[in-house]
Image 1: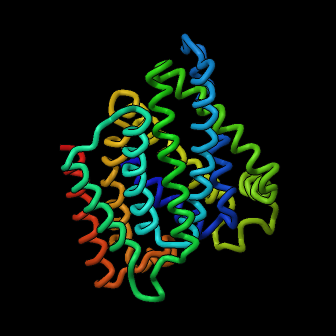
Image 2: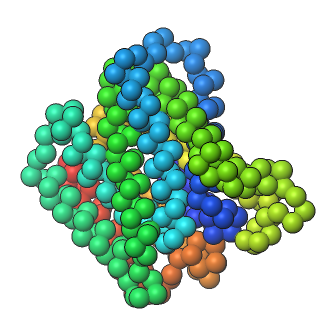
Length: 297
């Protein structure tokens, strides 16, 4: 639920406040440094090959967010988010099968097949509604990177425990975010500065007051952080692929919120509310839920 609400806020900010996808990804990455406050309770720090996994996981997380927000800024949230989240458990399960020696069962293949059908339905539509190729490409890259993060972080948790793995990967994610907004895309860093220390003319071009944008960013990342910690804790205790596949509720939440907001959904979320679109998305969500049920049970 927390992740679903965070995705809605993300979409609003990308439509109304942030011009650059790197801005929000960098901000999320920087906020990850808050996890370092838990370091006094860390008993063992990653070393050797585990440290390498920490670096890969942290870099993959922030980069995946960058790709995710790039996709989200180019397509409907209720299509982009399910596509990415349908691919993540599939790629994750492939990774855990190869590297962590998890085994695929027939029911999991059935579940994956249903997820693929749901993904196709969510990415289809009329010519004016169909996802751009760039959005699809960014979605696929994002899903792969999130899966890489999930597989590596599961290995880290198994080696050094949840707290050590969580804190160390968040530090790397923060450093990656810093590099993103200072070296890779300096304009993103300037945009963050304008949001939290606005000039008189800042924040008006996309129709949102900078103070409102800052508040939404804080609320969104608080919800996103809560959801992320819960997901990571679950991964540390179980299968990364299964945990990733259990987030179907956030897709339903996006559709429900878009329906409740009605006329405002198009302006704030960029969502189409035509009856045919709602029917297709509802069918896709049902198929996705069935697919996830096959994977879980």
